[in-house]
Image (cartoon, rainbow, N blue to C red; front, side, top):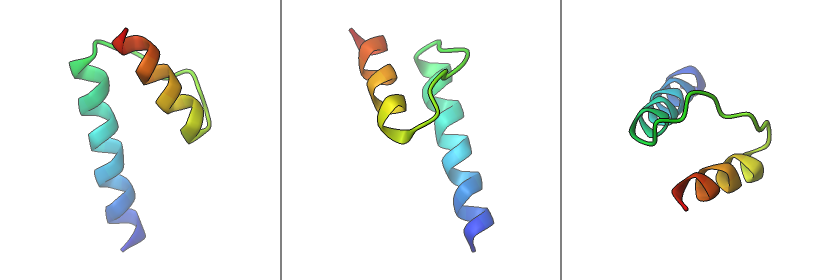
Length: 42
């Protein structure tokens, strides 16, 4: 079910943001989100 898959993705993003102490992902596209996470890891 698409809704269940999306819910799991949302929970994964919440976990990543919590672990990295990121309040908001400011980007909209998946590619830019990856780049924002990479920069935050530096």
